[in-house]
Length: 133
Image (cartoon, rainbow, N blue to C red):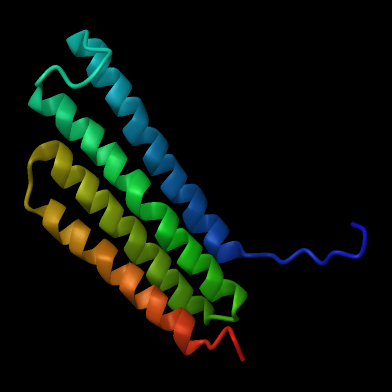
């Protein structure tokens, strides 16, 4: 390809795809709830629709940063086991947060905390890998 080297990033690809399925599922859920309630603009003040919208939106807000950090760690030579731990924890955290949002469960807070810890851990790990040197 015109002298370019393609790099495989299998760990980021795996967790990117799995998180994409989660985001798509949450988006389909918003459409399902909207159709059920016949509310196609806004949230109609319905708590269930508000929760569905926020579960999807929150996932869209947090997953990209975590995946970018995971990609950076992988490109900087991060350990495969560590990358899978971060990627798996991200997915578990996002699933827990979404479930908690939709079912009004305290697991939402645990999922949010785990997501933030993954983002913090990945940011630190990228710096530990010294991408500048």
